[in-house]
Length: 368
Image (cartoon, rainbow, N blue to C red; front, top):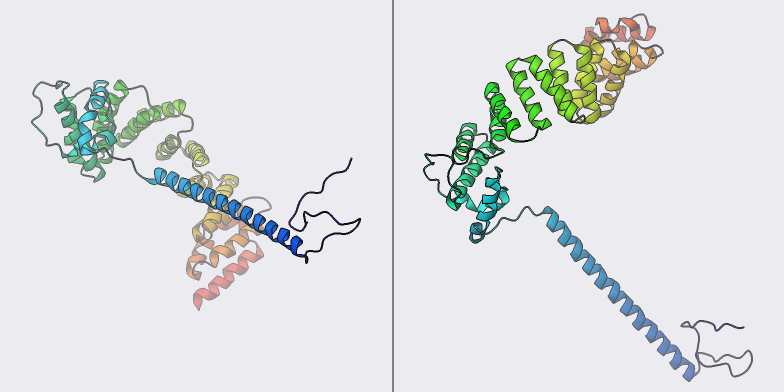
């Protein structure tokens, strides 16, 4: 069984006149067929290119539309549509929740009225608008760090609807920023009564107790925070600071290590952890932390001097420590470098010939 050869632009459609004879493209009929085939192929290529270009344009338009939808902020409702959302806001307020602000931003033009004498106010559209107005004004003042104004506005919202959830949390955060820790404790304890236990709220209570100097209560709340959410990094950091204040350096280093494992990009915290390990003479852990810091901050001479200190106390690391020392010395003037090398921190290297040579070179430079 034979197969028919596929057509291509170089074949003619006329059969050979005899065995082994093909029509030459130079003849008139064959040339016409050849030209028609070329034109047909050209039209096909044009159609394909048009389709590809159309699809590319549609894809580009789709990508631009998607990007705009992601980067554009939440669209605010027009002023005329504000009244249609009263029912939804009323429902949120009846549940004791703060309404979403993108729904109520158009109401910022509302003028405040006298507060109700008998709270809570009735569930009318007007009182709902007034509550929203004071919430918006409070948020705006808090964002501008006008804390007293923000507190007054939040209190007005509560005077209209005392059971409104979420406002005590906002007030407590302001008190923390003002370092009014006792007031902050009261607000956050109210929050814990009006909503399920939240590790964020418990952590905030612990911060307030830290501010008050009540370490026992602060520790209890922080440990409870970690129990509720083992990956809540800030609680580990706060516990580390608490134990550092109590001079419990082993536990401070341990909790700070938990924190830096969760937040490896926090280099200042990693530096504190390294210093704690140096104080505890845990040279291996100190070297690990300082090596990471030296890679992130290769021009920081203090980090390099500390790294050399840790390396000098580890068996088989003294040559590496001297290499690190030379790097650190090259970053500072001779007097400062000599001050570092004369510290007791480098007693483990003091009998090394390379160390003595470094001291001599720095002494000569210091005199010149």
